[in-house]
Image 1 (cartoon, helix red, strand yellow):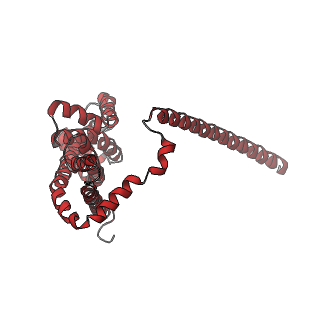
Image 2 (cartoon, rainbow, N blue to C red):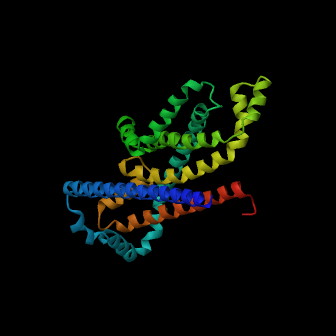
Image 3 (cartoon, rainbow, N blue to C red):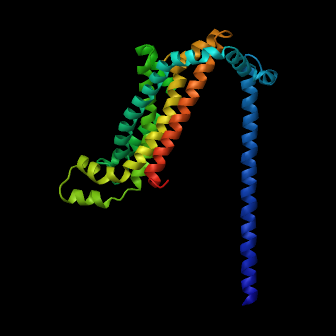
Length: 287
């Protein structure tokens, strides 16, 4: 009996070691393929580059050094530059806030329509999920460029572009939250004749609202950065001011430094604020 047990253990150990070696072999091959693709892609990108990555690598810190140097020489002008850039910063925050609000509302609706047990039309769940996939796949800058061509430059195309992407991103997160909700309250409401909107509002929203709000706050941080980036393509906000300052080159780098400082402080403040609110909602006042 002992010999049979030892033999069985030896067979199991040998099988486990064989699987481990196979897994390591596959992992090594995948890593090798990834490195080869990375090297090939780098070569193609470097050949198509106007300059060259390796020759330009020693100069990578030249621009930041010029900005810091000029900002330090003209440091007495920084407070004035910060005040002048403040309206553009407020516009950027407004773009992010409007986009987050509209995107969250759209995400709530699509998440309900694409969750098993909640959707009023179960056969259309794959359709609504593919819609969210499409919205997530479209970069904000591409949507903004199309809308700027149609509507002209300004904050409206930026807000629409960010909201469109936010619907897909938040819709995916909200649907995952919905899948963990308890369906018994909804079944109880259905048994007394409640309509679908009533079941969602009274049975689902109280369970998932804290998680929805937490994800929306996190997305708001991301949208502030996105709205700043879209300013480079003419969508308004502080990114537009930064683009103008950088485009002028030497002589305007102190203004660019002021915009960098203001943008960094804003993102840091909202990051800390949203983290604090999320922690309060998750852990309560004790945290």
